[in-house]
Image (tube, rainbow, N blue to C red):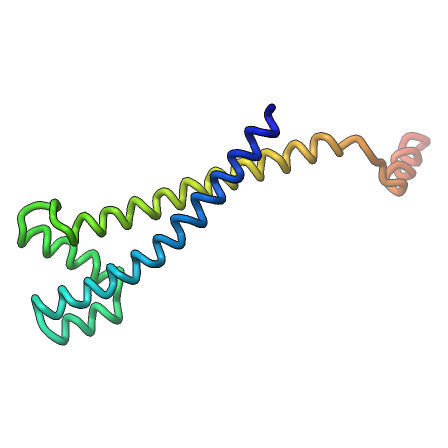
Length: 132
């Protein structure tokens, strides 16, 4: 039963990573283009070029700027940015699930195989030390 739960967790974690990573890449591209358009419309070509060169910093700047201009984060641009951040949080959770399961499985493998074999050289050295 435990193995089934672990396998389901592995599959769900991997699916979360894949699905939301693909969505994140697409949404990130759309948001970047949208940010360039916003920068151009509000401040001109220089702001648009700076947005192209520094996408993450520009998105943070324009998020705060639009939030202050509108007076609330309840607008399409700010909600898209917040959704994008939420998407990456979900990816991080999926990665965490997969890492936890893999670490647990590796620990179990080590525990199960720890007494299965004896290295002859170490065994011989142990006997020599006991005889001295």
